[in-house]
Length: 525
Image (tube, rainbow, N blue to C red; front, top):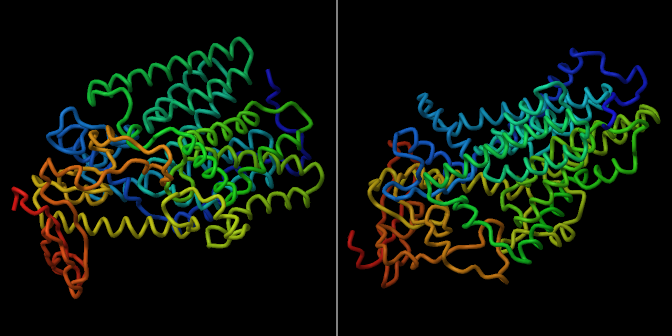
């Protein structure tokens, strides 16, 4: 069994007690709040979850489009759907605000867990503060503590499960880790990857028979949970994998290439993500390492591997690597503590470098030149933009699609249909039947072949043209917003455009029109 004694440190660098742990956490909440405020937003994809949750809360079932049997699983986060449904059943009208409040709370609790875990490893005040400040000042954490998705909740439960399984003692820590694993498996369909990797890591690092028995308990609960989720999926959706996996993931050599670029881009923004695991190997402690230390390195690597295998994610601030960040924060604390043996100055220097390297990109300043960053560009099909710029674009586009959805809701009827490629906010606010060009809620799209040599943006490997749905006679094939003073664009011989004004007295901004495009000869004309 690896020695789990605290790291040997000078007395003055030790945490004095629980009061210091609380104080470090409270102090780190200040920069955490600053970055949350700086990066608060709601991404468009969150509204897909909100629509499923609203339909479930209204007794319409776990579905996106009404009247489709079996309902299509166009989400990857059943646990988050259920939570958002409870929020709406409780009468909370602003579901996006409730989602952000939940994930901000999860971010704050995760920060506390990082502080507590680092202190329990024997880190002193300086090292524990370094771990806390590293996590609190990451732009990735600020953005995904909001965003509307359950990303931060997912990261919190992965870390809590890991700490419990790798450092737990007593008769029940395996059961406790298994119960936490239920949340991991439910919050995201791909949670199984982290649960499997964690179980394997625990087997490697905890070898006492009594520990192995607890790991078996954890494994049985995790496997049972995953089996139940598959059974629910089969019963409700008639498929054993989420439709999102079929729509978004197309494995090929290009997928792996794009995934590697995604990882390199993450390291360029967060150099500590590459340097920390390497530094931990070369700067070993004077006593055998705690299972959480080695486990943190391995969980970081497992998260990296996942991001590479699935080809990355198009969203800003490396969403798929968020589960690695609390483990990296713990490693910051441990590495800083190991430098304390050389003196406070070297430890302070290493902590400052690790924390400071990730802050500049939050303000549009980069350690690497634009030409280097372009070499690792992974959003193929889109021009290179820095993460801050891309995040601003995500926020702006979501706000525009919210307005479009409200405009559609004002001027159309729920029994009408439309073809769209972005189905989040526009679908949530309009309540229209959506034909999805990317196949998330329209499985027929996923039967179309995907080019294995076309370079596309992560998650957008598949998209069909509007004409794919012509035989289904959608009411509208396109919707857009236009300034009231702008001329109506030419429709062409096969299309018909209807222009509708958006009244300010109904809460719409001034000088806006809604354009609805139909196919000529559509029966709904």
